[in-house]
Image (cartoon, rainbow, N blue to C red; front, side, top):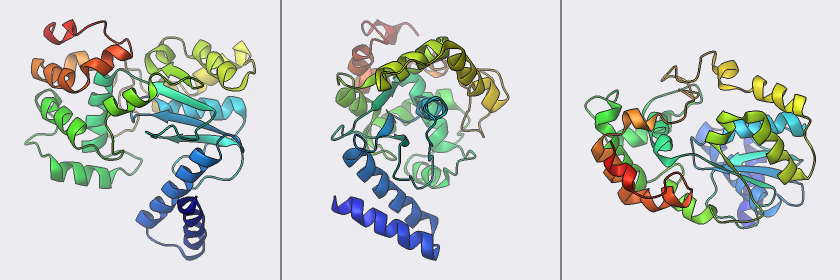
Length: 279
């Protein structure tokens, strides 16, 4: 609670004086932590939780539209019903929560680009730290670099400070949480959106509205490209399922399996570890 109050006071001071973005970001983080862990059930807040690059922003956008509540993304939240999107390892106090899952191998490919290439959402600090801690002769050579990057992502995680495997172990079994897969959303967005709303709120989302919202926030509409057409300078880089199959070398398969093979099976993305030797 003390951190929560400090965050609100820091927020007020920042809004009055105009201070550097780093301090503003820290205040934002403190306020959000306090709100989601202490107030999500009371306000209520709808918490969309994910390991980065799993589709959480997309889910948050659609829920904001169908529930008619704000989605204060990348800015200070307000104390009213709204969508709170984040990367939270601890489930303490979280209510009204949607956990978004994605095949960890596709996550690693997207995470590589998030950590090493700039996009429109100002990830410069993240890139600077990652390139300082792990450097490559040619960052464009994803296939060659992925084994080392995967090792780095699991052993020295930052932004957030936990790995994909950590997140899976903490969240995959939780009840009273709406679980949704990125892959299922890509296959049938309206049906999955209807299910999320029903399980999250007990309300029924009209089929026509679900189709309209799914179309409004589709990858194609938001990016201006077809799924699979890559733009490395965009937060919405490629928007496809199974990209890892082209990017994972035999060594990348082995490294990922060593760190998260069990978690891949826990989420039922694989039945066993035979996939490691198929490449």
